[in-house]
Length: 312
Image 1 (cartoon, rainbow, N blue to C red):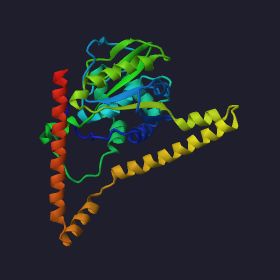
Image 2 (image 1 turned 30 degrees about the vertical axis):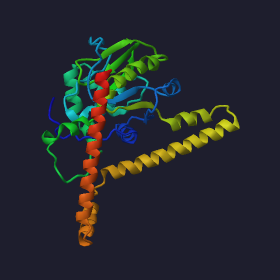
Image 3 (image 1 turned 45 degrees about the vertical axis):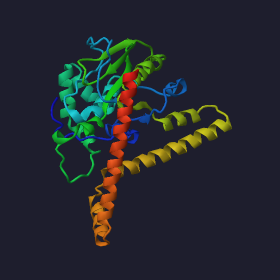
Image 4 (image 1 turned 90 degrees about the horizontal axis):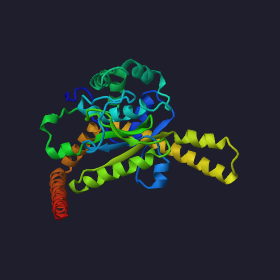
C-alpha cells in the first residue's frame, strides 16, 4: 500500500461523515451511529458500514462482480472516505450530485486497483477529506509510531445490497465479498449476524468497533410525513423531532469547527501561566502518574482477557 502522502487521518464520527458527504455535493443523506443491533434499530437504518481494524470474511465468495463498484484501497489514510464512497457509488437510489456522478461514469470501467488510484488522485475527494485535518504545526513520523498507537486506528468496511446480493466491501480485500442473496427488505437481517460474529470473534483482543449507517436525512423524512394526513399528536411529535435534528446538526457544526481549530496558542499560554505560578512541575508529575496508572490498568485488562480467552 502506498504511503499516506497528503491524505490525513480523520475522526470516526457521524458529524464528520455527514459533513463530508455534504461537501461531496450529495444531498438528502446523513450518518448516524448505531448503538444496538436489535430489530427495531436495524429497521430504521439503510446502507450500513462498519468501522473495523482489518480482515476478510473466512467463508465468503470473492468472485469479481462487474455490477458492484469496488475500489482497492491504495493509500492508508483514505479508508474512511473510501468506505463511504463504496456505499454511495453502489446505491442507485442516492442522488450523487454532478461531481460524484461524473467520477463514477469516468471510472466505472477501471479495474479495482485503478479505481483506487482514481479516488486517491481526485482533487475533490482529497480536498474534502483533508478539510477535516487537525490544525497541527508539528510533523509526526508515522513510521515511528508504536504498535499500540497503530492498533487504535480504525479500518472501515462497507456492507451494502447490490442487485439481489449482500456485499462486504473492504478495500484491503481482492474484491467484493458476496455474502449471499438478499432483498431490499431483508438485507439488514442478513448483515446483522455477520457484524455480530465479527465483534464476538475479536472481543477478547480488545479491538474496538464503531458501527455507523448512512440513512435518509431525517428532517426530510419528517417533513415529508408532515405533508400527509396525520393526527395532531403525531404532528407535534414530528415537529419536536425536527427541532432535535436541528440542535444535533448545530452541535455537529460546532464540533467540526473545533476539530479544525489550532489550540496550540491556547495550550502554550496555559503552560506559560502555570510556569509563572510555579505549578507546572507538579502538574507534569501528576500527569505522568495518571498516564502510568492508565497504562497499567490497560495492560492488566488485556492480560485478564487473554487468560480468559485461553481457558475458553
